[in-house]
Length: 418
Image (cartoon, rainbow, N blue to C red; front, side, top):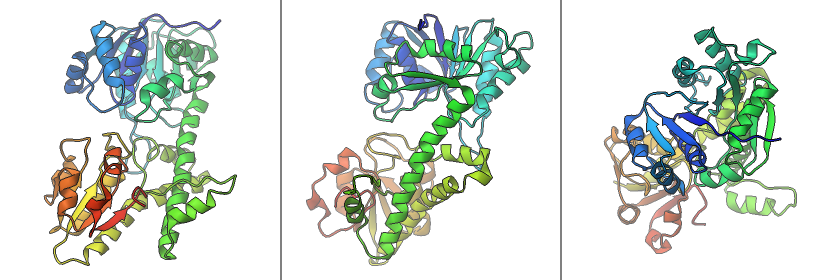
Protein backbone atom coordinates (compact mmCIF):
# COMPACT_ATOMS: atom_id res chain seq x y z
CA UNK A 1 0.00 0.00 0.00
CA UNK A 2 1.35 3.42 -0.96
CA UNK A 3 1.57 5.52 2.19
CA UNK A 4 1.40 9.32 2.21
CA UNK A 5 3.49 11.52 4.48
CA UNK A 6 1.74 13.52 7.22
CA UNK A 7 4.60 15.06 9.24
CA UNK A 8 6.44 18.37 9.15
CA UNK A 9 8.88 19.25 6.36
CA UNK A 10 11.80 21.67 6.40
CA UNK A 11 13.03 22.79 2.99
CA UNK A 12 16.58 24.12 2.87
CA UNK A 13 16.78 26.69 0.10
CA UNK A 14 13.84 28.86 -1.06
CA UNK A 15 14.88 29.37 -4.65
CA UNK A 16 13.31 28.40 -7.96
CA UNK A 17 12.76 24.79 -6.82
CA UNK A 18 12.65 24.94 -3.03
CA UNK A 19 9.89 27.53 -2.76
CA UNK A 20 7.54 25.88 -5.31
CA UNK A 21 8.07 22.55 -3.53
CA UNK A 22 7.26 24.20 -0.22
CA UNK A 23 4.09 25.71 -1.68
CA UNK A 24 3.01 22.43 -3.28
CA UNK A 25 3.29 20.62 0.06
CA UNK A 26 1.82 23.40 2.20
CA UNK A 27 -1.25 23.96 0.04
CA UNK A 28 -2.05 20.27 0.49
CA UNK A 29 -2.08 20.39 4.27
CA UNK A 30 1.56 19.74 5.20
CA UNK A 31 3.28 22.04 7.70
CA UNK A 32 6.34 23.38 5.90
CA UNK A 33 9.19 25.52 7.21
CA UNK A 34 11.31 27.14 4.52
CA UNK A 35 14.92 27.88 5.40
CA UNK A 36 17.15 30.31 3.52
CA UNK A 37 20.32 32.27 4.27
CA UNK A 38 18.94 35.31 2.45
CA UNK A 39 17.04 37.40 4.99
CA UNK A 40 15.22 39.31 2.24
CA UNK A 41 13.88 36.04 0.82
CA UNK A 42 12.76 34.88 4.26
CA UNK A 43 11.03 38.23 4.89
CA UNK A 44 9.24 38.11 1.54
CA UNK A 45 8.00 34.53 1.97
CA UNK A 46 6.92 35.24 5.56
CA UNK A 47 4.69 37.98 4.14
CA UNK A 48 3.30 35.68 1.45
CA UNK A 49 5.33 37.27 -1.33
CA UNK A 50 7.47 35.58 -4.00
CA UNK A 51 10.93 37.06 -4.69
CA UNK A 52 11.00 35.99 -8.36
CA UNK A 53 8.62 35.58 -11.30
CA UNK A 54 6.85 32.24 -11.67
CA UNK A 55 3.20 31.89 -12.79
CA UNK A 56 0.77 30.64 -10.12
CA UNK A 57 3.46 30.51 -7.43
CA UNK A 58 2.46 33.81 -5.83
CA UNK A 59 -1.10 32.63 -5.27
CA UNK A 60 0.08 29.34 -3.79
CA UNK A 61 2.60 30.96 -1.44
CA UNK A 62 0.25 33.68 -0.21
CA UNK A 63 -2.47 31.09 0.38
CA UNK A 64 -0.17 28.70 2.23
CA UNK A 65 1.16 31.50 4.46
CA UNK A 66 -2.38 32.75 5.16
CA UNK A 67 -3.41 29.22 6.20
CA UNK A 68 -0.44 29.03 8.56
CA UNK A 69 0.97 26.01 6.73
CA UNK A 70 4.08 27.78 5.36
CA UNK A 71 6.58 29.75 7.42
CA UNK A 72 10.13 30.89 6.67
CA UNK A 73 13.25 31.33 8.76
CA UNK A 74 17.03 31.54 8.58
CA UNK A 75 17.42 28.83 11.25
CA UNK A 76 17.05 25.11 10.54
CA UNK A 77 14.26 23.67 12.73
CA UNK A 78 13.37 20.20 13.98
CA UNK A 79 11.31 18.38 11.36
CA UNK A 80 10.23 14.92 10.26
CA UNK A 81 11.71 15.37 6.80
CA UNK A 82 14.32 17.65 5.25
CA UNK A 83 14.50 18.54 1.57
CA UNK A 84 17.78 20.08 0.38
CA UNK A 85 17.18 22.41 -2.58
CA UNK A 86 20.33 24.52 -2.66
CA UNK A 87 22.46 25.53 -5.68
CA UNK A 88 25.07 23.16 -7.10
CA UNK A 89 27.21 25.36 -9.36
CA UNK A 90 30.43 24.25 -10.97
CA UNK A 91 33.88 25.60 -10.21
CA UNK A 92 36.35 26.99 -12.77
CA UNK A 93 37.36 23.44 -13.72
CA UNK A 94 33.68 22.56 -14.42
CA UNK A 95 33.62 20.14 -11.49
CA UNK A 96 30.64 20.33 -9.15
CA UNK A 97 30.89 22.72 -6.23
CA UNK A 98 29.03 20.97 -3.41
CA UNK A 99 29.77 23.35 -0.57
CA UNK A 100 26.12 24.52 -0.40
CA UNK A 101 25.00 20.91 -0.05
CA UNK A 102 27.59 20.29 2.66
CA UNK A 103 26.47 23.44 4.49
CA UNK A 104 22.85 22.24 4.40
CA UNK A 105 23.87 18.84 5.79
CA UNK A 106 25.75 20.57 8.61
CA UNK A 107 22.60 22.54 9.45
CA UNK A 108 20.42 19.45 9.46
CA UNK A 109 22.69 17.05 11.38
CA UNK A 110 22.24 18.57 14.88
CA UNK A 111 18.45 18.45 14.47
CA UNK A 112 18.19 14.72 13.83
CA UNK A 113 16.67 12.52 16.52
CA UNK A 114 15.94 9.37 14.52
CA UNK A 115 13.25 8.44 11.99
CA UNK A 116 13.75 11.48 9.73
CA UNK A 117 13.92 11.45 5.93
CA UNK A 118 16.64 13.56 4.28
CA UNK A 119 16.14 14.20 0.57
CA UNK A 120 18.60 15.84 -1.79
CA UNK A 121 16.74 17.60 -4.62
CA UNK A 122 19.70 19.62 -5.85
CA UNK A 123 21.01 18.33 -9.18
CA UNK A 124 24.27 16.57 -8.38
CA UNK A 125 26.93 14.21 -9.78
CA UNK A 126 26.41 10.50 -9.15
CA UNK A 127 27.53 9.65 -5.63
CA UNK A 128 26.51 12.94 -4.00
CA UNK A 129 23.54 11.47 -2.12
CA UNK A 130 25.79 8.72 -0.80
CA UNK A 131 28.12 11.53 0.24
CA UNK A 132 25.26 13.18 2.14
CA UNK A 133 24.70 9.96 4.06
CA UNK A 134 28.42 9.71 4.87
CA UNK A 135 28.60 13.38 5.94
CA UNK A 136 25.67 12.84 8.28
CA UNK A 137 27.42 9.78 9.72
CA UNK A 138 30.56 11.84 10.35
CA UNK A 139 28.58 14.59 12.05
CA UNK A 140 26.31 12.23 14.00
CA UNK A 141 28.26 9.08 14.88
CA UNK A 142 25.51 8.23 17.38
CA UNK A 143 23.07 7.54 14.51
CA UNK A 144 22.96 4.66 12.04
CA UNK A 145 22.91 5.89 8.42
CA UNK A 146 21.65 3.73 5.53
CA UNK A 147 24.98 3.39 3.69
CA UNK A 148 26.58 1.70 6.70
CA UNK A 149 23.98 -0.86 7.69
CA UNK A 150 21.74 -3.43 6.03
CA UNK A 151 19.31 -3.10 8.92
CA UNK A 152 16.83 -0.36 9.69
CA UNK A 153 18.68 2.99 9.75
CA UNK A 154 17.99 5.85 12.12
CA UNK A 155 17.77 8.29 9.18
CA UNK A 156 16.60 7.65 5.62
CA UNK A 157 18.50 9.35 2.77
CA UNK A 158 17.33 9.70 -0.85
CA UNK A 159 17.63 11.78 -4.01
CA UNK A 160 14.64 13.17 -5.90
CA UNK A 161 15.68 15.48 -8.77
CA UNK A 162 13.28 18.12 -10.00
CA UNK A 163 12.29 18.00 -13.66
CA UNK A 164 10.23 21.12 -14.24
CA UNK A 165 10.24 23.92 -16.79
CA UNK A 166 10.53 27.50 -15.49
CA UNK A 167 7.32 29.29 -16.37
CA UNK A 168 5.37 26.04 -15.78
CA UNK A 169 6.84 24.89 -12.48
CA UNK A 170 3.60 24.76 -10.49
CA UNK A 171 1.88 22.73 -13.21
CA UNK A 172 4.72 20.34 -14.00
CA UNK A 173 5.64 19.78 -10.36
CA UNK A 174 2.24 18.15 -9.95
CA UNK A 175 1.75 16.44 -13.33
CA UNK A 176 5.25 15.20 -14.26
CA UNK A 177 6.52 11.75 -13.34
CA UNK A 178 9.00 11.74 -10.47
CA UNK A 179 12.13 9.66 -9.96
CA UNK A 180 13.04 8.86 -6.35
CA UNK A 181 16.34 7.14 -5.68
CA UNK A 182 17.22 5.88 -2.23
CA UNK A 183 20.46 4.78 -0.61
CA UNK A 184 18.36 1.65 0.09
CA UNK A 185 14.97 0.59 -1.30
CA UNK A 186 13.34 1.50 2.02
CA UNK A 187 14.88 5.00 1.80
CA UNK A 188 13.27 5.44 -1.64
CA UNK A 189 9.91 4.28 -0.31
CA UNK A 190 10.01 6.68 2.64
CA UNK A 191 10.95 9.61 0.38
CA UNK A 192 8.21 8.72 -2.11
CA UNK A 193 5.62 9.13 0.68
CA UNK A 194 6.40 12.87 0.69
CA UNK A 195 6.00 13.35 -3.06
CA UNK A 196 2.72 11.43 -3.10
CA UNK A 197 1.25 14.39 -1.19
CA UNK A 198 1.15 16.45 -4.41
CA UNK A 199 2.55 14.44 -7.33
CA UNK A 200 -0.11 13.08 -9.71
CA UNK A 201 2.43 11.60 -12.13
CA UNK A 202 4.06 8.20 -11.72
CA UNK A 203 6.62 7.98 -8.92
CA UNK A 204 9.42 5.70 -10.07
CA UNK A 205 11.66 4.19 -7.40
CA UNK A 206 15.35 3.51 -8.02
CA UNK A 207 18.75 3.81 -6.39
CA UNK A 208 20.23 7.21 -5.59
CA UNK A 209 23.13 7.19 -8.07
CA UNK A 210 20.88 6.15 -10.99
CA UNK A 211 18.41 8.91 -10.09
CA UNK A 212 21.27 11.44 -10.01
CA UNK A 213 22.56 10.28 -13.38
CA UNK A 214 19.08 10.22 -14.95
CA UNK A 215 18.61 13.95 -14.27
CA UNK A 216 22.00 14.75 -15.79
CA UNK A 217 21.22 12.63 -18.83
CA UNK A 218 17.92 14.46 -19.41
CA UNK A 219 19.68 17.81 -19.63
CA UNK A 220 22.72 16.52 -21.52
CA UNK A 221 20.36 15.06 -24.14
CA UNK A 222 18.75 18.46 -24.63
CA UNK A 223 22.14 20.18 -24.70
CA UNK A 224 23.44 17.90 -27.46
CA UNK A 225 20.35 18.54 -29.58
CA UNK A 226 20.60 22.30 -29.08
CA UNK A 227 24.29 22.16 -30.03
CA UNK A 228 23.37 20.42 -33.28
CA UNK A 229 20.98 23.25 -34.15
CA UNK A 230 23.53 25.90 -33.19
CA UNK A 231 26.22 24.23 -35.28
CA UNK A 232 23.82 24.11 -38.22
CA UNK A 233 23.36 27.85 -37.77
CA UNK A 234 27.11 28.42 -38.06
CA UNK A 235 27.33 26.19 -41.14
CA UNK A 236 24.37 27.91 -42.79
CA UNK A 237 25.86 31.31 -42.05
CA UNK A 238 29.09 30.26 -43.78
CA UNK A 239 27.20 28.89 -46.79
CA UNK A 240 24.90 31.95 -46.88
CA UNK A 241 21.79 29.88 -46.21
CA UNK A 242 18.75 30.64 -44.07
CA UNK A 243 19.09 28.15 -41.21
CA UNK A 244 15.44 28.54 -40.24
CA UNK A 245 14.37 27.53 -43.75
CA UNK A 246 16.82 24.61 -43.79
CA UNK A 247 15.52 23.27 -40.47
CA UNK A 248 11.91 23.75 -41.49
CA UNK A 249 12.49 21.68 -44.62
CA UNK A 250 14.46 18.97 -42.77
CA UNK A 251 11.71 18.64 -40.18
CA UNK A 252 9.25 17.58 -42.87
CA UNK A 253 10.93 14.17 -42.60
CA UNK A 254 8.69 12.05 -40.34
CA UNK A 255 11.56 10.97 -38.09
CA UNK A 256 13.47 14.27 -37.88
CA UNK A 257 12.83 17.03 -35.35
CA UNK A 258 15.74 19.46 -35.38
CA UNK A 259 15.48 22.13 -32.68
CA UNK A 260 15.82 25.83 -33.43
CA UNK A 261 19.16 27.61 -32.88
CA UNK A 262 19.65 30.46 -30.46
CA UNK A 263 22.29 32.71 -28.90
CA UNK A 264 23.51 29.99 -26.52
CA UNK A 265 22.26 27.88 -23.63
CA UNK A 266 21.49 29.28 -20.19
CA UNK A 267 19.83 28.52 -16.90
CA UNK A 268 21.18 26.46 -14.06
CA UNK A 269 20.33 23.09 -15.63
CA UNK A 270 21.26 22.58 -19.28
CA UNK A 271 24.29 24.87 -19.12
CA UNK A 272 25.65 23.13 -16.01
CA UNK A 273 24.46 19.53 -15.65
CA UNK A 274 26.30 18.01 -18.66
CA UNK A 275 29.60 19.06 -17.10
CA UNK A 276 28.80 16.83 -14.11
CA UNK A 277 28.75 13.84 -16.48
CA UNK A 278 31.99 14.95 -18.10
CA UNK A 279 33.55 15.36 -14.67
CA UNK A 280 32.43 11.88 -13.61
CA UNK A 281 33.71 10.13 -16.78
CA UNK A 282 35.88 12.54 -18.81
CA UNK A 283 37.37 9.97 -21.19
CA UNK A 284 33.98 8.48 -22.06
CA UNK A 285 32.07 11.72 -22.77
CA UNK A 286 33.61 13.46 -25.84
CA UNK A 287 30.22 14.09 -27.48
CA UNK A 288 28.75 15.73 -24.37
CA UNK A 289 31.87 17.86 -23.96
CA UNK A 290 31.76 18.89 -27.64
CA UNK A 291 28.12 19.95 -27.30
CA UNK A 292 29.02 22.08 -24.28
CA UNK A 293 31.87 23.68 -26.23
CA UNK A 294 29.57 24.51 -29.16
CA UNK A 295 26.92 26.07 -26.95
CA UNK A 296 29.40 27.89 -24.72
CA UNK A 297 31.03 29.47 -27.80
CA UNK A 298 27.75 30.68 -29.21
CA UNK A 299 27.39 33.94 -27.18
CA UNK A 300 30.87 35.11 -28.20
CA UNK A 301 30.05 34.44 -31.85
CA UNK A 302 26.84 36.46 -31.62
CA UNK A 303 28.71 39.35 -29.96
CA UNK A 304 31.32 39.30 -32.75
CA UNK A 305 28.57 39.47 -35.40
CA UNK A 306 26.98 42.46 -33.68
CA UNK A 307 30.35 44.21 -33.47
CA UNK A 308 30.81 43.70 -37.22
CA UNK A 309 27.41 45.24 -37.91
CA UNK A 310 28.42 48.26 -35.82
CA UNK A 311 31.18 48.90 -38.33
CA UNK A 312 28.57 50.13 -40.81
CA UNK A 313 27.89 53.20 -38.68
CA UNK A 314 29.99 56.09 -37.40
CA UNK A 315 28.44 56.28 -33.91
CA UNK A 316 25.90 53.46 -33.70
CA UNK A 317 23.30 52.87 -31.02
CA UNK A 318 22.54 49.20 -30.32
CA UNK A 319 19.40 47.86 -28.64
CA UNK A 320 19.65 44.35 -27.18
CA UNK A 321 16.28 42.86 -26.35
CA UNK A 322 16.24 40.41 -23.45
CA UNK A 323 18.57 39.36 -20.64
CA UNK A 324 16.83 36.28 -19.24
CA UNK A 325 18.10 32.84 -20.18
CA UNK A 326 14.74 31.90 -21.74
CA UNK A 327 11.42 33.43 -22.68
CA UNK A 328 8.97 34.84 -20.14
CA UNK A 329 11.05 34.32 -16.98
CA UNK A 330 13.18 36.75 -14.97
CA UNK A 331 15.95 34.22 -14.37
CA UNK A 332 19.35 35.52 -15.48
CA UNK A 333 21.40 32.56 -14.24
CA UNK A 334 23.98 31.43 -16.80
CA UNK A 335 22.17 33.58 -19.37
CA UNK A 336 23.86 33.80 -22.78
CA UNK A 337 22.12 37.14 -23.34
CA UNK A 338 23.98 38.67 -20.38
CA UNK A 339 27.27 37.32 -21.74
CA UNK A 340 26.55 38.73 -25.20
CA UNK A 341 25.76 42.21 -23.90
CA UNK A 342 28.90 42.14 -21.74
CA UNK A 343 31.06 41.02 -24.69
CA UNK A 344 29.70 43.79 -26.93
CA UNK A 345 30.16 46.43 -24.23
CA UNK A 346 33.74 45.38 -23.56
CA UNK A 347 34.66 45.13 -27.25
CA UNK A 348 33.21 48.58 -28.03
CA UNK A 349 33.58 50.65 -24.83
CA UNK A 350 32.37 53.84 -26.53
CA UNK A 351 29.20 52.21 -27.86
CA UNK A 352 25.77 53.52 -26.86
CA UNK A 353 24.26 50.21 -25.74
CA UNK A 354 20.63 49.98 -24.64
CA UNK A 355 19.14 46.86 -23.05
CA UNK A 356 15.48 45.99 -22.60
CA UNK A 357 14.39 43.28 -20.19
CA UNK A 358 10.73 43.70 -19.23
CA UNK A 359 10.90 41.26 -16.31
CA UNK A 360 13.67 42.95 -14.29
CA UNK A 361 13.97 46.49 -12.95
CA UNK A 362 17.76 46.81 -12.80
CA UNK A 363 20.83 45.59 -14.64
CA UNK A 364 22.85 42.71 -13.17
CA UNK A 365 26.05 43.97 -11.46
CA UNK A 366 28.37 42.68 -14.20
CA UNK A 367 26.62 44.91 -16.75
CA UNK A 368 26.10 47.87 -14.43
CA UNK A 369 29.84 48.09 -13.83
CA UNK A 370 30.67 48.35 -17.54
CA UNK A 371 29.39 51.91 -17.70
CA UNK A 372 28.12 51.96 -21.28
CA UNK A 373 25.02 49.79 -20.80
CA UNK A 374 21.65 51.15 -19.70
CA UNK A 375 18.27 49.56 -19.12
CA UNK A 376 15.42 50.99 -21.16
CA UNK A 377 11.90 50.14 -22.27
CA UNK A 378 11.84 48.17 -25.52
CA UNK A 379 9.94 50.80 -27.48
CA UNK A 380 12.39 53.54 -26.47
CA UNK A 381 15.46 51.40 -27.06
CA UNK A 382 14.29 50.40 -30.54
CA UNK A 383 13.32 53.95 -31.47
CA UNK A 384 16.84 55.21 -30.73
CA UNK A 385 18.72 52.23 -32.18
CA UNK A 386 20.52 51.73 -35.45
CA UNK A 387 20.92 48.01 -34.72
CA UNK A 388 18.33 45.86 -32.93
CA UNK A 389 19.48 42.50 -31.52
CA UNK A 390 16.80 40.08 -30.34
CA UNK A 391 18.28 37.79 -27.69
CA UNK A 392 15.20 36.45 -25.86
CA UNK A 393 11.85 35.58 -27.42
CA UNK A 394 9.68 37.07 -24.68
CA UNK A 395 5.99 37.43 -25.58
CA UNK A 396 6.49 41.14 -24.91
CA UNK A 397 8.85 41.34 -27.90
CA UNK A 398 6.71 39.05 -30.04
CA UNK A 399 3.85 41.52 -29.78
CA UNK A 400 5.91 44.52 -30.92
CA UNK A 401 4.82 46.07 -34.20
CA UNK A 402 7.21 45.20 -37.02
CA UNK A 403 6.91 48.77 -38.25
CA UNK A 404 9.14 49.80 -35.33
CA UNK A 405 11.99 47.92 -37.02
CA UNK A 406 11.77 49.77 -40.32
CA UNK A 407 15.14 51.18 -41.34
CA UNK A 408 16.99 49.27 -38.60
CA UNK A 409 19.63 46.58 -38.95
CA UNK A 410 18.00 43.60 -37.24
CA UNK A 411 19.86 40.59 -35.85
CA UNK A 412 17.25 38.06 -34.70
CA UNK A 413 18.99 35.22 -32.85
CA UNK A 414 15.70 33.46 -32.10
CA UNK A 415 13.96 33.57 -35.48
CA UNK A 416 11.05 35.40 -33.85
CA UNK A 417 10.68 38.02 -36.58
CA UNK A 418 11.35 35.90 -39.68
